[in-house]
Length: 311
Image (cartoon, rainbow, N blue to C red; front, side, top):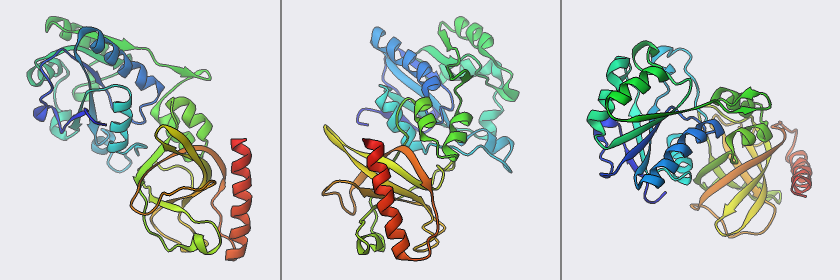
């Protein structure tokens, strides 16, 4: 993510003095629909010698408006930054969605952007995007206000997958069901976990299946269970593996979900290494077994199923 400039809110933002093409949205998951908005800003910025930026928000507005039942986000902030950087974004502004920010009138929003981002040249949003107090602002208002301020607005239509619009809520539903085929199709990339390998109790080694363990606890979690996974290795071929995600009921019922990756081929990866794990296919739900021997036999079956998945 080298070169990605990050700012904690509009008041802190000091992007380079070049035309700024700014995509605005929550962008949880950065799915294909989001990418159509963001990539438009990236392409326009490249053509004009400008900078591609993203204005996103934290926490989700629902945390303010319905704190008893907020929307659970599938993507931690660091994970979102990584995907945005991969798309070619230069500047990320993470705006705290506070009561004060939510109270800004829709008619004042463009002026607010202009005040904090004087180099702003164009705004990119989804066609249904709403903004301002009471969500009274829509794309037509944004276009008119931006025109008066000497800026342009690009709005992207919703993208459909299998006859229905791609949305973050739809991706979350499939993620909760463990349906990684649908999740990855709508994301346009493989859902991934990034973290540092932790030292565990090393029980996997005692039954012949050593694992690389990463704590993984996003707000919107994948289904607990066993998955076929890959670990990218830069320019080298990715390592293939089988992973268990859950609370480890057979070994030690924990309250903290853990991703345990057993690689199907030799590697030098070990404790303290930074690891990215791509989730490709759900193989079975997490189960509690009567003994470690039953668990060992099941892991052997899981290895076989993962190998068959990879062909």
